[in-house]
Length: 414
Image 1 (tube, rainbow, N blue to C red):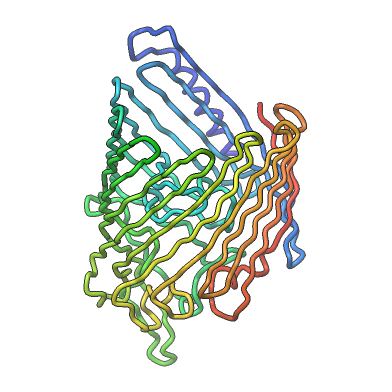
Image 2: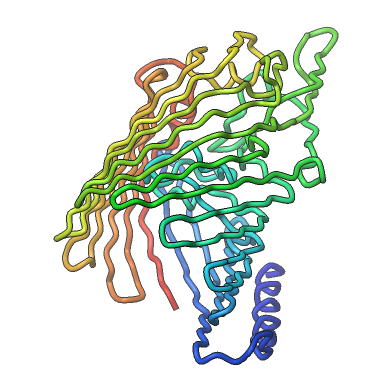
């Protein structure tokens, strides 16, 4: 109830703000307030039934010179209020400035990314069929300059957010040697954690090529100052730390009719260049290729993607973070992903199926989604998620085997 009161207060204040015009009067004046509710029931493999009710409030004020977006989520069962976006954009011809809390995507592929480094992941609900829904919004300042054949994109981050990873519960990812450890969190919003980067995009006929650079922090946590029990030698305390790195990368799109070839590749240069600090991630090469096809008549979409990485100066130390994050103790990792989306019955029915296979661990996840538009503002949906592994190698897919689930729910817009 306290969170609901906060939302209503924010709506009241924003309504008052809309009465003021900070810029010269313009003919175009778009104001939108919308509400979305999503209620569902999930049945898991371990026979647990989990209801869910999420309410979203979106507010948008748009004029030729500026745009304000506010989007808040309220999870009724968790009693958790979170902001998906709170941003202000200013438009000065070909120059756009955006500031606030939001997500910003770098990369050219659809199924997976390796250069989309500006926001951390949110894995509290497992793997979803929407990459944007698995992102954690962050405070950023974005300056974009548009020209006919090229675009310059500048990003400044006053700090960073760590990935949302559960230590316990259904989607816990904490490895066994750290299950009873007391962690001490690093302050991620200081002058020392400022990050930023730039992306320059060139467009020529069928081809878009982007060169990018980023200097910031890996949102995946590392471990330092390990303390062991003198009698049992069990790990008892650890500091959570994060690795600063520089990314030198590119991504491209080649479009030929309904076909699209997307490439991403980059080198992550770690602050631990020699790979001697077990609590920090080493430098690595990462690469991705994706081919997709869009049917112009039905708007059906099909895609196949490959992603890989190779870690330099890899260590077999069981407390090294690269070793902990690896598959079967290998310095390399390779994954395949495939998906298709088919709209039917004049877009009233949408079928979406996607899956990922991790080659070294033989782990996999399969996602299925069926939605039916009962009306313009009500949608019925069915979801299915299947995790598994064809080996005993430790992996996310192996840990989440009991999280197979089916769900049914309704979405409504007001």
